[in-house]
Length: 171
Image 1 (cartoon, helix red, strand yellow):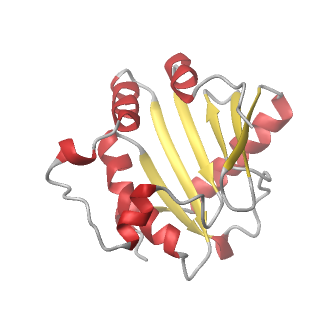
Image 2 (image 1 turned 180 degrees about the vertical axis):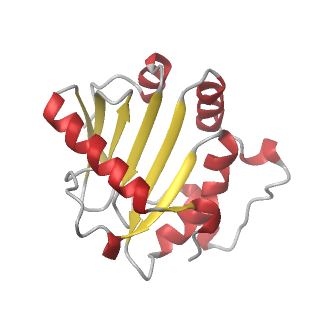
């Protein structure tokens, strides 16, 4: 089902202060990049042209204009194959300017968490991701409902406080 939500680029383009992303799944629908990694192909991180994507440039441009971008991931341990791959490719996110932290799921028990992954822009506008059981995006929902944004903001900050910075998180 196609989404009628504004594009991520549009939402990030209007963002003025901060964008935070909470991810809570242990796998998402596989991509060609994931399948290549599974086959043993690795990225030459010294050849930025070979791996730098429009998403990376969008993040870099947004950070350059003063927007802080943070991503937190809640993961089961031992981690799934997909999370091992995500950890590997997070080098691109960090290079683009995202701050990334990881939280083992066992440490998240005391946090009131929303039922879905989300992006929160400037603390008020939410882009909520709805996934199929196989991890494919089914729909993105946009809301600025104050109570929902407050729950998501609180959940993200709690995960962020407990999380380990990407550079220190080993799998």
